Amino acid sequence: MNTEALKELIYKMADDLLILGHRNSEWTGMGPLLEEDIAFSSMAQDKVGQSWQLYKILHTLGENDPDTVAFMRNADQFHNAQLCELPNGEYDFSLIRHFLFDTAELLKYQMLANSSYTDLANLAKKVKGEAKYHSMHAKIWIKQLGSATPESIERLQQSLDVALPYALGMFEKSPYEKEIIDEGLFGGEEVLMEAWKAEVEKIISDTKLILPDWSTIAPVYGGRKGVHTKHLQPLLDEMSEVFKVDPTADW
Amino acid sequence: MYGGGNVFEAMKATALADEDPKKLAEFEARIDRGEKIEPTDWMPQLYRKQLIRMIEQHAHSEIIGALPEGTWITRAPGFKRKLALMAKVQDEVGHAQLLYAAAETLGKPREQMIDDLISGKSKYSNIFNYPAFTWADSCFISWLVDAGAIVNQLANSKGSYGPYCRALERICAEESFHLKYGHHCVIHLATGTKKQREMMQAAVNRWWAPMMHFFGPSDKISVHSEILMKWKVKMASNDECRQQFLDMYVPKIWELGLTIPDDKLRKNTETGLWEYTEPDWDEFKRVINGDGPCNKERLAVRRIAEERGKWVREALLAPKAKYVTPLA
Image 1: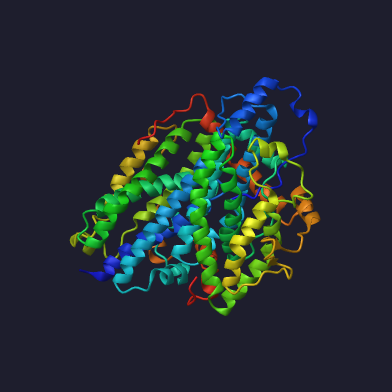
Image 2: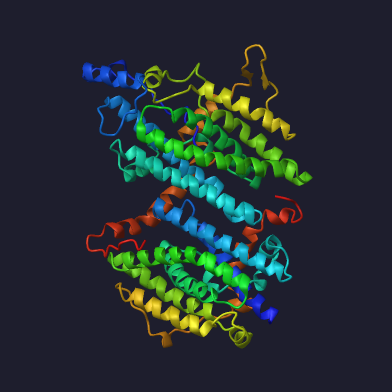
């Protein structure tokens, strides 16, 4: 087994979940209605919890302990897609991102449930139930707001247009793509992306939103290689503010 | 979490003059027998009004209380704390949801209650008008403010209004986990490195006065509320709650090597009561009337959240919206 390839695969997932979970948690106390406040907080807990489990797997593969890995790295050492780190913006953007990300996340877990790497397969089997609820939550809201008022439709459309290039960036191929597929660790970004596109098309076609032709959208790559927007480092600085007061202390 | 000793206004002697004496007597007899009053039962207008006021303030306190602690979710040190604090603050927002629903059974819609919060017409627990400067402040809130809230809420859960009592029972069960979480955090700081200990002591020094204010003015100077006690709307006096809190938590605070910034604080072994420096009630009044360090900020945040979410709520009400049946 190519350990470097495996680690790269897990780092991308763990970092996606930590950063998006962190962003979701920023909605606490700020949601458009109490029920959504609570929903985003639930998803934040699931995502951060899943990232913790993935960092624990990385620890068994020789990486540092989860707290150190999560709280002590700088932006250029993170492998999350840029989609995850973008600021929450208004609820429309957070919702669109949630929909685009979690549609992919559920499909990814379903694929990983068959991974040849048992620890990852077991985790995927365990948490795909959580991901299913996240995906359902997003779909319900997209269908509702995507066909409600002129304002809600326009807002969702604008956010969709902004988010799509970043969403395609999630599927940036790994330098180890061939080994990952050949060793049965994961079915690969191409397969995942095609399944994701089909699902996104299906949901959007049930609303008044317009999905541009995929060929006209230029993916924003870089996140997987540590290239990030200006928004990630301030997020990390905030996240580690207390931890770094004394990283050796027991908090 | 909610203190709530301060919420009642003076009542006029004529307030019950318009009530049917027979129905009123039956109502009071039911309460005496320990029965719960349910939403469709007859109740005096004054009972309804005071309950709405109390439950609404409690609900507001939950969502406003989510703000000072919520600030620390994104800064919590380590996975364990980050996840626990997220869950804790989420619980508080969930409590608001439960409580608004309980208050709605008395006839006031949630939207109207939130409008009254934002306009400053209804109040919330005064303690959240103080800032949480450090991580230790958030730990103090999780442990001791929640502990104070439990004292008050456990008493009120034995009250007479069914929906409020049932909501409080569920809330208290969750609050007891918050208290364990908060205590765990404070223990780690109070027994940790020099920096951590200093951080925790500074938080205790900052929060002690607001904590003493939390239970409301002394019974000697607070509005008389005999009828509310008789109707089991208010179940314990402000001083009773404060005494119970001091009795349960001062020894635990001292046990951790922390000091409390009140030279006079001691338990009188003869009376069994705690003696303390009388809190500055002028400051309390000033803050509750809008002139505290964070009143404006708290309401501004709430107002912005409401304004930003308006289009979502409108879209949910759109008559032609494609209503989606939940998938599971």
